[in-house]
Image 1 (tube, rainbow, N blue to C red):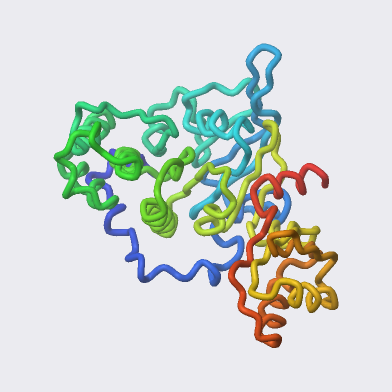
Image 2 (cartoon, rainbow, N blue to C red):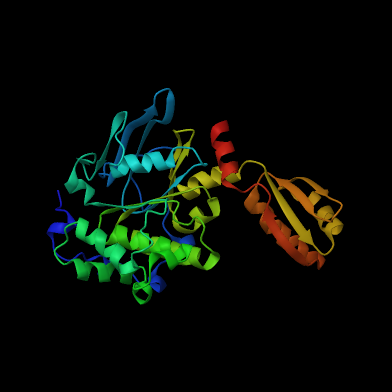
Length: 352
């Protein structure tokens, strides 16, 4: 087994992070290449060892079952842990991090048990959803505290390196209490990375961030995954996950609903009926044209001129809308899924 980063001197993660410009576009990322160990819908098990293995894990509190018999494995790259609020995502992340004991089953990181194993803890970085910060500390002091607790050989150098990864050196002297939401999220990431962990766990890291902050954090998540770390990010927002994760683990009511390649699962979801709302300059003319398209199931135009169309083939339908509008000389103002939320995904998976 590889030795923890704390025994190898100054962590090398800063050197291994690629420039954002060198990352391949998301659309061209090889499907399933990031986490081949996932087991479930869309990806088969392989003989490659998982960086994180969750094996038959359950957690209950008296009569309340928070997580029930969940099994999956992840390797290097970014995997999204999806589920509605209350699905058990945070509980599962805490068990992987060793903060909670499992009621049954086991969690291993690189083949080693997690709970009560300091050497294994040092291979894990955790970015909690809660604001686990001290407002009176500066950003540098907060990250340095984590470096000190990890017993790193060069605390100051490791702190500066971690601040550089998240591009927070310029504001590291400011108090945490004066940080914006996005800055607080990035400083938590720096604290989680200060000891160069093999595995990074992030619990809803994009919550409360504005569009610019969200884009920056997504780029950072992609870079960390591309550096060879195993990154598990929880979220309940499908659009976010689509931008940074090649694989997903879906938890519903504490149970594993699906695990595997994101696009494989999404293709199956796209084959079910979807409702699309369209705003156009001449809605009735466009609606009439859509009626004759094979991908259209039904079309209606409301009093405000909004087109609500149901389709059984979302991808073909989107192409047809733009093509038909162009042929008819109709200006399109908006094409947006009316039900393309994570709840739609959950509904599909529950029905299966």
